Each structure stands twice: as C-alpha cells, then as structure tokens.
Length: 191
Image 1 (cartoon, one colour):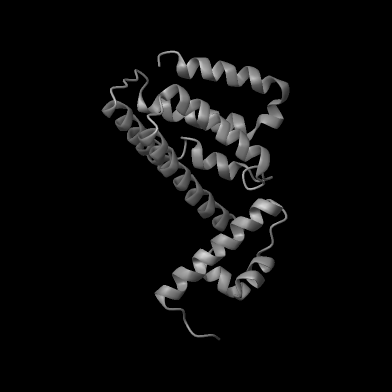
Image 2 (cartoon, helix red, strand yellow; image 1 turned 30 degrees about the horizontal axis):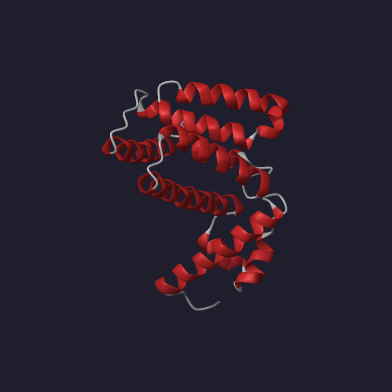
C-alpha cells in the first residue's frame, strides 16, 4: 500500500486526471474511453483512480460541469465586453453548441443524457444553477438598459431547449433547421 496523498498532491492528481480524461473523451468518445488507459497516462493505479471518482460516469459529469462553467464565464465576459444583445447571445450560443456537437466527441457521445442533465431544468440543482447563470446574464443586460419580458425560467428553458436540439440534431434530421428557426423566432420575438 502506497503512502497517502497530501491535499496538494490530491488536487494536482485530480486536475491531471481531468485534463487527460478530457482529451481522451474528445478523441475517443465516452463508449471507447477506458479507465485503465487513463491511469496509465496519469501514472496512478486503478485503485488510485477510485479514490477520486466512483466511476467513469462521475468523472465525465465533473468534466462536463467544469466545461459548462468555463463556457458560462466566457459567455458572461463576451456579453459584458462586447455589448452582446440577447439576439446575438442566442445566435452565438446555438453556433457554439452546433460547432461543439459537430466536432467534439466529448459532446456527442453514446451517453449523451449526461450532457442533457447538465442543461435540462428537471433536476433541482441544475435548475438552480441555470437560473443563477440567467440572472447574471439578465443583470448585465439590465445594466446596459436592455429589458427582457421573458422570465428567468423561460430564458433558462430556452437555453436548455437550444442545447437539447443541438445535441440531438442528427436524430432530428432535416427537421432540425425548421425547429431551430421556430425556436429562434420564439426566443427573439420580444427582444
């Protein structure tokens, strides 16, 4: 049995696990990801991995949450610095989601309900997190004199629907463009 990790070592190893795993998920997707390959690249034992994460799904969920928070911080910065209006916010968000789901296996895995769970509002923690983000966005717009009649819940639902559509564009097929245009009109109707 090895020596216990210090808190600093634990933090460094956990970051390294997430960094390597993220790159592997992007290249391989969720289904082909193997914990044994990860532990070999990180330089820890299989048992060491399980001191940090219950399983592959828990690791994937944490990486998705981190990515969601990183993207949200970037969005807030763009809205603030570039005076992005609600119309361009939703258009840019759709383009980012479409790009990510087209080019990155991390977002288009066989276990896509994990991504949905991070944006859909039926989970109380996710709903609270999404509303907090929408309130931050709304405050920036309010400070710039932009008023929106839609409630925070409606805006959070619009973001979730947009993410869901982009995640499942292949299943929707040719109707995706029609759905996207309908959502865009609905979202932007009063902006």
